[in-house]
Length: 315
Ligand code: GTP
Ligand code: MG
Image (cartoon, rainbow, N blue to C red; front, side, top):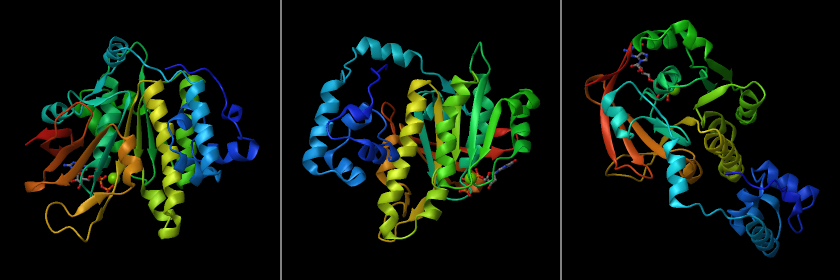
């Protein structure tokens, strides 16, 4: 959706200092402010509640708070493409594959298959029909990207391993700030270098944040930064009709006696920004189980598969 370019400094009471604070936590345009709550702005920019209300009201009235017709939306939906997992039941769970224009979050314990899925998507994004070569961008925070594994999976998908390796741009992120900066730089690859980026993998989304912000007092700051990061990714997904795949970890919930005693890190910030959420766990006989826990248009459900050398195999 094209918005009239109007900077946040045009809002009442938003001078240089306030605008810097707002930008730092991801409020970079009128739309992001228009959809914020007064409490969000009070926390992040240190303005009074009354000022926050006025800022938000002005942002709202100066935007055409775009109503699109159902027909226009359907047209947008027709542009959505689906990246196959190479596994029929997994694809079916997701209504045909990993959607472009969306963020898909996978959370699960160590070894549950999150990184493997990131690798498989990086290979299979090449199967999208394109005049221009699709590019996968892989932000690797845990040093677990393996080109050798890409070669195996490319062979498994009957694709040329060397061509596939060339079409994946990998960046190692050394801390959360670096990770956020890398995500912001992806737009340069698209705009300045003309790359047809169709997939962004952030593996792991959360590890650096989790390690750097320890203790209760730092939680608000961590969540603000995560919010900003997710916002950047969401914008890329939306603007360039590309798929974002992020991996998340789980923590033990000591107070749960029935059902699954784990929950995703990152709280509602990550959950809300994600369009689809997958919970991965280890199944019987070395299999893996993927459960769709959140989706705008698909039923909850789950499927099982095996991670094998050539790809994800049916049970
Ligand atoms: P963390 O990053 O530690 O949280 O785990 P993860 O969810 O990213 O797990 P990952 O995707 O790394 O899954 C690892 C599992 O995939 C291993 O336990 C292996 O069972 C399996 N795996 C990885 N590579 C191969 C392979 O080449 N062949 C086979 N058969 N299995 C593989
Ligand atoms: Mg991993």
